[in-house]
Amino acid sequence: MTSSVITSFFLIAGAFFSLLAAIGVLRFPDLYTRMHAATKAPAFGLLLLQTGAAVYFSSLYTTLISILVIVIIFLTAPVASHLISRVAHYTGTQKWSKTLIDELEAESIIPEASEKTGGEESS
Amino acid sequence: MMDNLPELPVWVEMLTLALLSSAMLLALIRLYRGPSPADRIVALDLIASVTLCFAVAFAVISGVSRYLDIAAIVALVTFIGTVAYATYLKKRYND
Amino acid sequence: MNRLKKIIENTFDFFIFLLFYLKEMVKANLLLARDILSPRMKISPAIVKIPIRASSGIQLLALFNLITMTPGSLCLDIDADKTHIYVHGLYVKDRDSFEKEIREGMEKRIMEVFE
Image 1 (cartoon, rainbow over the protein chains, first blue to last red):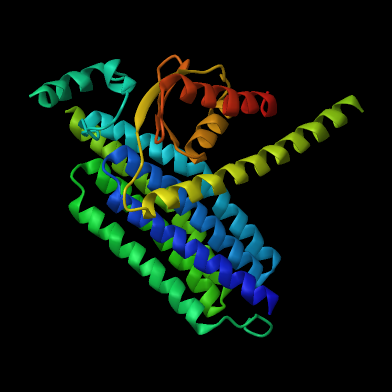
Image 2: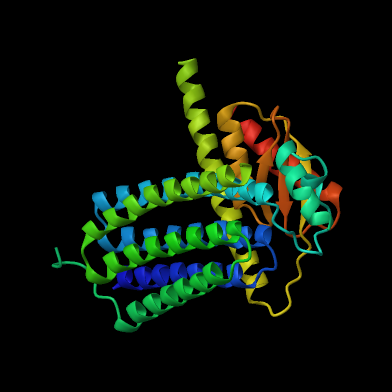
């Protein structure tokens, strides 16, 4: 009974955070703010869902699989966001007009790419 | 396998699946609309995460713990997929 | 004996760090939830270049991870000689307090746990 209540809570909370990530990705104004929603919230939702599954089955096997998946997700999510930001920089993605400071564009990491996109943005 | 697992209320299962389905739908809208290729990668990444959540939720709902293996494999493949897409775009825009 | 003690201390530190990480993550997601669901978003994004002291691989990994998962900050890139990182902040009021938050709040902790 208790286990069922706990599992229900974790399931609904995990699904809710996944939905939250999707709403955030749809609503936020530019790529970088969208990445905020797309890295944090799904990882947290998955953490909750896996915890729910581990509580529900309560066996050694499911617990180990859950820990494995959580570790994989939490190690790879920042790397994926880093790669996406690299691509955004290469392809010259526009930033939101209300971005306060931007020190990434000022001194570029990849010289030839910034020359290529610099012309497009100034026009 | 099904013997001593606790029973979940039906509305909990339905609500979980409904929330995950709407998340998938919204991510697909962003995939369709996304102005830049990077936006599309973000949407694809999110879709993969939602698929992962689906696998876990389905394992719990059906009561078969073997379905959790799907989650482990999708978690590994997703990352490689994102890296491959990012590398491809970088190569393409370099030329 | 001395070595064993050190290993136990390190493990203890790591678990404290894990709890801190979990707490920060819950906070980050609640903040994100409030922001996403409120009709008018109160965000002021900025990209800030921050000097770092962390140098070894595991320190950089932990720092990247912690910055990405904590409220309102996202690690974007690291420059070629690994002395500066580019952080995207969601709630940046002014540059210096944001930099201070990253350096004192997170990097210091990382340097203590992963030496």
